[in-house]
Length: 247
Image 1: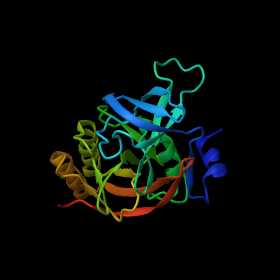
Image 2: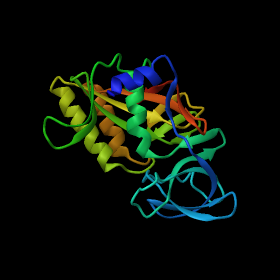
Image 3: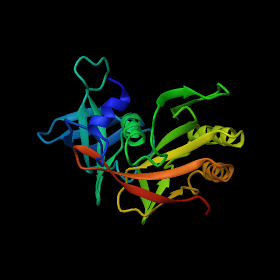
């Protein structure tokens, strides 16, 4: 079944973007490295879970905070039997698994809430004309799209990144070059934190990325921030945020 037919059945005319079945509550204990964490299940068992997001996540992953984990699919050849899906903050559950970003973005771009308008064709993981990078999507054979996830906020502002991002910087610079060459380009930030009104680059953490995104916007790269909430089972589109580039 094509992506288009799938999303016509499951997403169009709905704010629901994706379902994550099988989430199990646990309590975070520690994070021995960027990609692993220890947590305790309700019956007292300590588990090791894979952390897909290499960001710091200090506001979400701290001792005794509640998290949601999902079991690895049967037959999966991997060392960890669990993956981190979400962590709790005072406003609710925050998705912290980058492994879901592509499917969320596909649902968004095919559906009625896409900030880039109707989709007729959507190609994933497409090499840039320069051949130096692969972008997340090529929309309608004319708009190069890169997707980023945001899990940090300060007050009513969502912030990205939560750690310096060399990869994100490279993508933004290459999108700028494409825009200056007259091609359609866009960055879409999936904002998973709640109770925010605006999106801003985190200049204090990564001033180089902040400058690059401002230059990209000036060059014609479209920049969007889309708020998405997780209710333990479903990821729901809840609106678009104002994007602020300048300090």
